[in-house]
Length: 604
Ligand SMILES: *[C@@H]1O[C@H](CO)[C@@H](O)[C@H](O)[C@H]1NC(C)=O
Ligand SMILES: *[C@@H]1O[C@H](CO)[C@@H](O)[C@H](O)[C@H]1NC(C)=O
Ligand SMILES: *[C@@H]1O[C@H](CO)[C@@H](O)[C@H](O)[C@H]1NC(C)=O
Ligand SMILES: *[C@@H]1O[C@H](CO)[C@@H](O)[C@H](O)[C@H]1NC(C)=O
Ligand SMILES: *[C@@H]1O[C@H](CO)[C@@H](O)[C@H](O)[C@H]1NC(C)=O
Ligand SMILES: *[C@@H]1O[C@H](CO)[C@@H](O)[C@H](O)[C@H]1NC(C)=O
Ligand SMILES: *[C@@H]1O[C@H](CO)[C@@H](O)[C@H](O)[C@H]1NC(C)=O
Ligand SMILES: *[C@@H]1O[C@H](CO)[C@@H](O)[C@H](O)[C@H]1NC(C)=O
Image 1 (cartoon, rainbow, N blue to C red):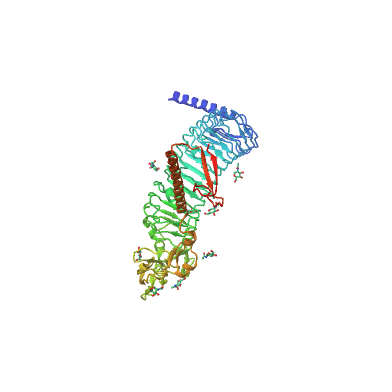
Image 2 (cartoon, rainbow, N blue to C red; image 1 turned 90 degrees about the vertical axis):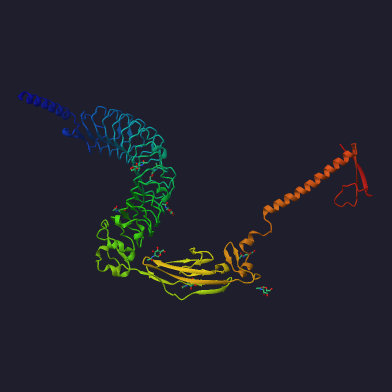
């Protein structure tokens, strides 16, 4: 027993002395060393070069906030145990090739905020254990091929805030285990698709503050493990091609503070594992109905600070895991329950900062005001005036039925409208309605089609149906449907158009639409203008060609005839005798044997 513990004590003391002896002897002047932590801290000591004499067993060396300008070749060669090296906030403009050779246990390297412009290939030689490197806030212009090739274990690479204009296709070659890449604030003008495709293990890609205006098709290739993509503050980005995100299987996607005017439904469709989607701060005006249904697992949608005017019914249909909607600071007047698949799952709702009309459409929200998490921001009513500026939580259960109410849509003037008119007449059918919120008016024809706001038969701004230059086939019943969240109402009108004898000119249909007979005849309509001749150019060419062909063929037949005629004479004449009429008309040919002049020509 005694011998054993004595030996143990002896061993311990030797080890202790040895350890202390080594670390005590290795602290550069001006630095603070903590042998027990095996670290040397030389931060903010006005050092102009890497100091000598760092203990060989140091694990951490902090050289940040100094005035170091260059890092030479094999500068740290003895520091086999070093795991963390911090060179941030210096003025390093040059790191020689193989500067870090020998640091085979280095895991973290920080070179943030220096003046590096180029990274010669081979700078990072020997850093086979490195997990994290921070190169942000330098002035690096390009990443050359094979810059990072020996960093097999690198997991995180920060390159933000450089002047990067180009990333060579094989720059990221060898980064087999890179999981996180940050390309913030670079001067790239397109996505470095080819370079990124080397990063088979990439899980997170962040690109903030770029000036790229379009995401083209297949912008991200072979990034099968990518789960999180952040695109933010690209003020010119306004187009996202339908297949730009193809090949990706994301769970989180941010495209915020860009210039998107609509949700890129087509590009998102295949992201069936997406759980988090942030499209905030884009000029998006509407979330359309039934277009996000493919995002089966979507849980959170953020569309804060956009220009949303409407969230259509069915907007989140199919999203049965949907639990957070953040639409703070938009122009929404309401949010109807019918937008959701099931409001029972909704936990967090940011609806503040919208001009909300507190009527029956928002009753579902105010009823859940104690259960729903408003993230510390209560929605506030903007209208009607009786509840203006009131927060949702202020309402007591008792006053709700009186306050959050709607007046169902109602057609005001129900007198029967029936018009019997002659062909060519213009007819108006009014449909005055009342309701709160203001009802939507729809006119339906007797063929059950919805009448639009343009065309010969159209719905005017005030809900009136206008039939211009009525035709016999317009006869029938028309139905005005008025509806709002509280109810529907309808009105049916009749139109009977009498045909006129055919000799009377009927309205003409021209390029500009239907034109009354009188004006159509007076004005030179575009249809008439376009065709000043009864034939078009093609017809004329064909006619001319055919005429010309028949002329040629008669000439040819003539020659053939002459040839046979001369052959039948059996002999070749060497002279031709040509008679001519002195009172010469146009043609001077043809041996008509007249009594004018005559001359003989020799045929060659
Ligand atoms: C990169 O962009 C910044 C900001 O637009 C600009 O100041 C800088 O000169 C650009 N650098 C290069 C190399 O183009
Ligand atoms: C954003 O898009 C609008 C048109 O959609 C355009 O007028 C505007 O200039 C764009 N903004 C930027 C910063 O490109
Ligand atoms: C897509 O990602 C999800 C979640 O990470 C994963 O469960 C699924 O297997 C992936 N699918 C493919 C095809 O990689
Ligand atoms: C909603 O969006 C705003 C603005 O982007 C943000 O500040 C807030 O944290 C978001 N709320 C939640 C719950 O994420
Ligand atoms: C609707 O507008 C049209 C034309 O602007 C007008 O002729 C008509 O009288 C209006 N109808 C009602 C009911 O206000
Ligand atoms: C009004 O009509 C629409 C469409 O026909 C229907 O979906 C809705 O449920 C109706 N609303 C009421 C309150 O009857
Ligand atoms: C149509 O023809 C009838 C009989 O020829 C004639 O009496 C009538 O005036 C004509 N109508 C017009 C509008 O020309
Ligand atoms: C008809 O043609 C004349 C000249 O040919 C032109 O001055 C006039 O503006 C045209 N009228 C219309 C309605 O296009």
